[in-house]
Image 1 (cartoon, helix red, strand yellow):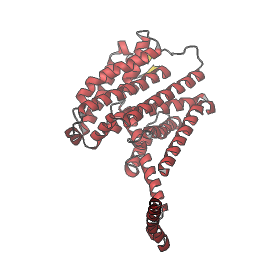
Image 2: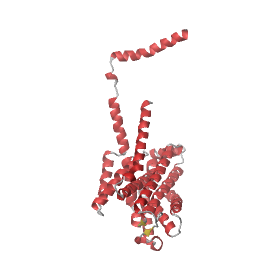
Image 3: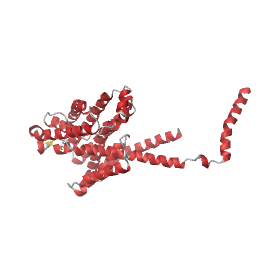
Image 4: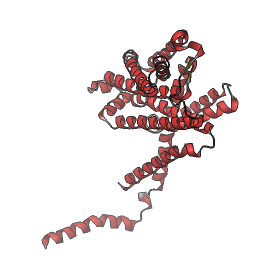
Length: 355
């Protein structure tokens, strides 16, 4: 019990320290550029955590989640630029529309498993890329779509600072939703699907309904991240928004940190996001950032297949077990005293009852 309470205190302390660092980061950043890097990492964290609703709970690997981020971004941008909706009203409206679109998509995609599901998810991204590139009169096509800024009178540095906190708030909401599901009966059913879907169905769990619900929830949070990115960045390109690489990055970040842990995708987003941004700055438009992502994926698969957090937890547990006293290190006198202790207690209890 003492060890469990100590572990909870350590987790709470680490959480408070991480929150303090995240909240104070804009004031400590030496220039607005570092804040933009922080926004990019937070965006990655929201996207990978959103992906983890499906990948972490059900074990279904989707490489096409970038489609929902792109739909959220273009939906928000089009509602602002074409329909004249207020920016944040457009953000939540677009997320709701993407959630509705995810229902028939999930209804079709979740009927298959394994590699077939991966192929279906990739096909969704490629189809949307062709549609948004070809429909130039409405989406802007390859010319892109310019999204009006939600705070037109704000200086650029303050603009970045404001969106940093908006992304941080969205990340907090996404993590909270994942935490609630993880500790619910619904989450237990999803994890049963991940371990053995056929057995879970035989036990009476409505596996298809559970998968569809969590798929829609994941799509909604992914769309919110994409829409907030559109309001921040202000310029959308279908090649970038509907890229298979986007979904691959989400998977890599979640796998690196650990898909079965709340903070796994967040840790992976910090590591992979910083590495990608560093490679882009140092080496420009060269494909070296893809090499970096591939190397990170190789390290994860070879040395930490369950992620950094499970590997670190196992290592700490190994040190704890090695530090514990084994029975071979206990003297004979100590063993005799431990055996005699219950007998002494029984004698004292008998004397009390006799008096």
